Amino acid sequence: MIMTLSGHTQNVTSLAWAGDGSHLASTSRDGTIRIWNPDIGQQTQIVQVGNPVYSVDFSPDGTQFAYNTSTGVVIATVADEAESTPTPTPAAQYTQPNYAVVAWSPDGTMKCRTSK
Picture 1 (tube, rainbow, N blue to C red):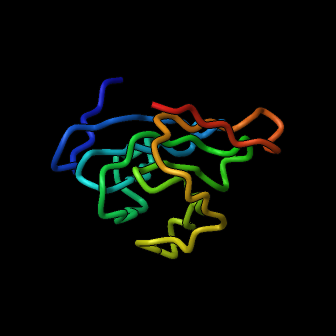
Picture 2: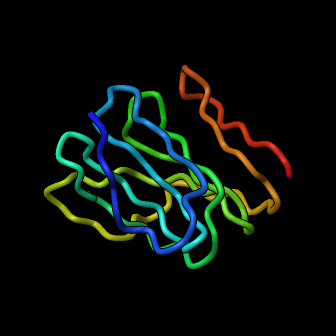
C-alpha cells in the first residue's frame, strides 16, 4: 500500500519507523516532528521545535524518540494517541550542536550521533 502523509510545509529531512511498526516519525526543515499512525495515515503528535530538524529515531521499545537540530539532541516520549500532547517534555537534552544523524542502539542503552 502506498499512502501520502501530508502536513510538513518544507522538505522532509528524515523518516523512522518504530520497531513494532505502530508509529512512523518524520522530520522537516519546517521545524516540526510529526508522529503518524501508519495504519490510518493520521498524525498523532506534532512537536514544534522552531528550527530545522535533521533526523529522528525511535527507542527499541518505541516509547521514546530522539531527534536533533542545530542546537543539539533531544529525547522525548511518544504521546498516547488519546492524550493528544502537542509538545512533549524532553526526557533528556544534549546541547552539543552540529550533529547530522541520531540513532539508538538495539538494547536502548546508547544514543549515537554523527557530526556534519
